[in-house]
Each structure stands twice: as structure tokens, then as C-alpha cells.
Image (cartoon, rainbow, N blue to C red; front, side, top):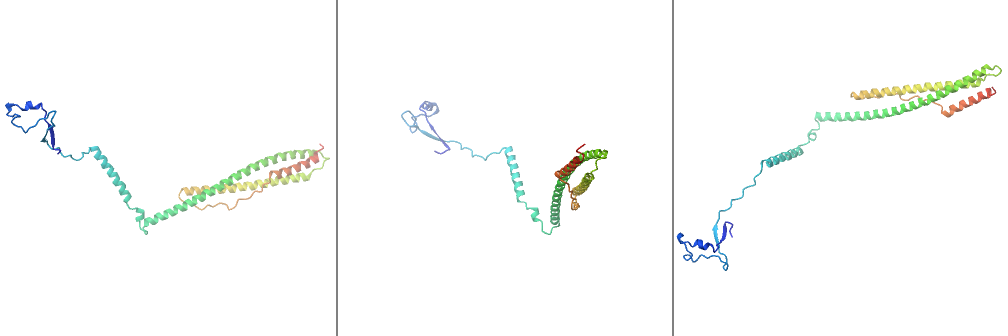
Length: 254
């Protein structure tokens, strides 16, 4: 059935209302009108109804319009950034700015290489300083041992001088003097080595200060450090033990 029409079934109870003489209408005058009853099928009556209004477009609320506008602006900005040409790629090869940038990058690379060399030199210097400190501590221990042995031998020589019947042991005195002179020479050499290490440390500090100011001067360090020929503990102990045995042979009877 057409959407514009509706169906209506007449109820038998309406016949009494329809058959009213005062209104000039009677069922007898209209035999073509049928009424629905329990035995009869319902009578469909069609009449026209007003057509429904055409659906209008979807109405958008103001917050939704603002939100979608912002989203559109953001998407447009991202696309614009992605589609912009790279400025570095558009710079011609003969551009002074590009050449200056390349020179600056080259200078920066050289500076980084020099700073790496400086760090390596500082590491070597720190290792040398640690070696110097260890040698100085070892030498201090040997000097203290020497002083104790010298004091002991001096006391023994003093007792020998008080006994005129015992001849003086010039060999022991000579060995003691040679040992003392050798230790003094090695101590001097160690002091010179420490001074050379101090000079290297000062040169590295000056180089580091200059690098912080923007320039890296050449590193002027001593080419070689003086070697210190220090005797081993076993060698020194052997010499002192032989000297003690000799003195005990001389003054053993006292």
C-alpha cells in the first residue's frame, strides 16, 4: 500500500452513529457501504494523509565543527612541513654559506681529533705520575732502611775505634760509603725524573687551557724521561747482609 494512504476498518458499533436521520444519512440509502462484523472480513477504507516531511541534512553542533576545523588545520600543517623542500639540498655547490659551513665542520673535526690526542696524552701522563709516586715511595722505604743500617754500622765502627788493639776494617767503611753514594745518585736521578714529569704535566695543563679558549697549540713535551736505575730490594739486602757479616767477624768477640 502507498505510504501516503492509511487503512481503516469500520466497527459495527459505528452503524448506530452513522444511521442518524438528523444528519440526512442512512445505511438503507447507501447499500454499497459494508460494515465489518465478526463473520465478515474487515472493510478497508483508504484516505489520504499528509506526506511526511523530507529529511533534512545532519545538523552539526558547534563544538564538533570547531574540533574538526582544528584537526584539519593540524593535518594541513603536517603535510606542508613534509612537502617543503630541504634547504640544505637546494643550496648550490658554489654558495659561500655552504662552503663556510663545510670549513667549519672540517675545523670541528680537527679540533675533536686534537682533543682526543690531548686526552690520550693526559692518560699517559697520569700513568707516568703514578709510576713516579710508586718509585718515590719505594725509594723512601729504601732510604729509611739505609739510614737504619748506617746508624747501626756507625755505632759498631765507633765501638771498634774505642778498641786500639783491633785494626780498623777499611773495606767495610769503603763498602758503606759506596752504597751510600749509589743511593744518593739514584735519589738524584729520581728527583730529575719527577721534575720531567712535572714539566709534562704543566705542558698538558697549558694545552688544555688553550683548548678551552678556542685554540689547541702543539704539545711541547720532553721527548724522553730520564731513566732511574734503582736496585732491587734483594740486591740492597744482600749488600747490607754481607757488610753486617763482615762487621760481625771483626767485632764478634766483643
